[in-house]
Image 1: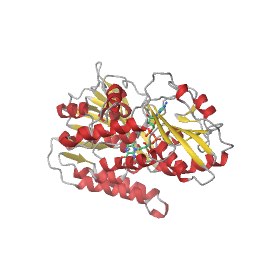
Image 2 (image 1 turned 135 degrees about the horizontal axis):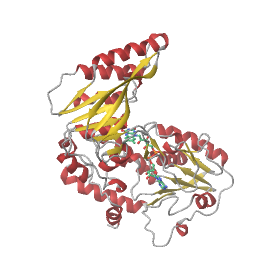
Image 3 (image 1 turned 180 degrees about the vertical axis):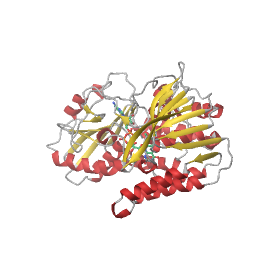
Image 4 (image 1 turned 45 degrees about the vertical axis):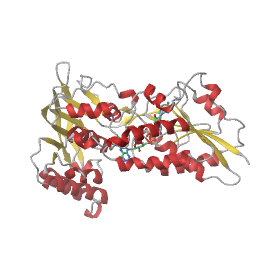
Length: 438
Ligand SMILES: Cc1cc2nc3c(=O)[nH]c(=O)nc-3n(C[C@H](O)[C@H](O)[C@H](O)COP(=O)(O)OP(=O)(O)OC[C@H]3O[C@@H](n4cnc5c(N)ncnc54)[C@H](O)[C@@H]3O)c2cc1C
């Protein structure tokens, strides 16, 4: 029975859903051997290092990933980085197809003066810091000031703002990295602004995330009800037949409910600012103030009024999108792998954020994977005979196989049990590798 050899690079949702789509396409005549290559000793991509620790249900998708990994013909090559430990051209030679699922991990820049001051960070640093990603465990973040400003109007910005504004006792039973829980307990931040350039009607928050805000026990959340009302009127006037799309109606309704929700007088608060375009971050060597231009919406378009306002603050976090980290031998255009519906040249394909850019939830990668796998199968020629890549990786390099990852996973979960946490994360590569040795 012919068996095709497929390399999947990147063990995030796109990687696992690609492997799953391949497994589900198998017939008596068509079978796949899948090697998944991941730069970290741990798989699951942003499900481990992105999804907020206070949203544990979302992370249960990892059970699906582990089922995929348990199927015959699947191998994990963890702690192996494409472009460093192994080259794309070698994979393309040895495998019938290579699927790049490497995500996008670099934070987009605002491009404004003062952005490089100390304590001006990207969500692409702050999020993996609190989630225990080994590359960010030593992040230099100063939480001794009172006021933080998060720039962006999407769920990542919301996660960052919530993590700063909630009472850290709410994190004690989560898998937030120990260093971050300790720093957040010691934090003096009490006021968090979250600022978007456009109006409430344009915000990319999703309504489940908005609707959980009033449930925060120790944090008051502020929306300007007049602004939400104006946004609602504007949106209706722009809508076809005067009817709002379901998600927009639900978002504006969620914002209105929060605006009307009574405030408990908590010391901690989160305040949403709209029509606020960051112009400059000021400070003597460190963030002290941010200047915003005031925008308005005219005929559905966002325009600058020429007026400004400022917020004195101690920390700025920018959450305005991601782009891919360049990888040796891979063509990137505008922060994504150059591709045509997932075909990236020769026998190379791409799925997920590396293909589409940083949009879509975990499930979006499932349909994406299934579409690209259909094309990949259409393109298959006669199968190659070998798939051994171990000889390509320098001898002595520590490759984390599935069984070793299972030991890391079990050790983290066991460490969490007596503390009532889902796991205690090891946060350095050395620690992770040593857990894998059992
Ligand atoms: C902060 C944040 C919060 C989110 N919260 C939610 C949520 O609550 N619910 C939801 O549905 N979606 C959420 N998402 C979106 C979701 O995480 C993405 O849709 C999904 O992770 C994208 O999958 P991916 O596999 O393309 O990328 P990733 O998850 O980023 O996976 C890419 C993988 O490739 C690996 N890799 C990168 N370069 C290399 C290389 N050179 N060699 C080998 N391996 C490499 C990375 O280490 C990583 O494991 C969130 C996203 C972010 C950023």
